[in-house]
Length: 89
Image 1 (spheres, rainbow, N blue to C red):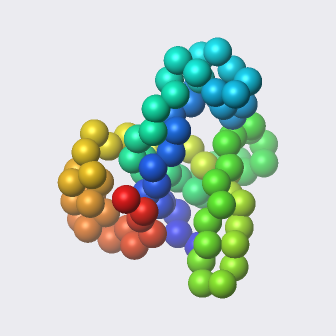
Image 2: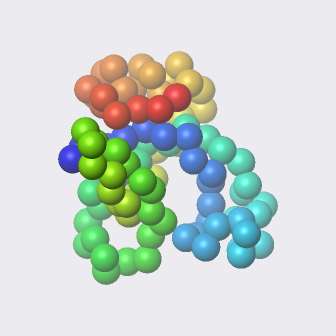
């Protein structure tokens, strides 16, 4: 299982998301983000989750946003430089 992945996700203030949180509604945009899918203290802190498919297995993993990219080119460059293979642009 990779430690970092790149996905386009909705920015949010908390795990409840824009449907239930006014602050999240104000941030309701999507951005390319570097996600840490192996954060410290798993299960001990409330975090958002994302579904990740590796091989034929699908898993729901909690994540922390490690970095937000301004452009797709920046995200592609970062993925190439750091060997991140699991990236969806």
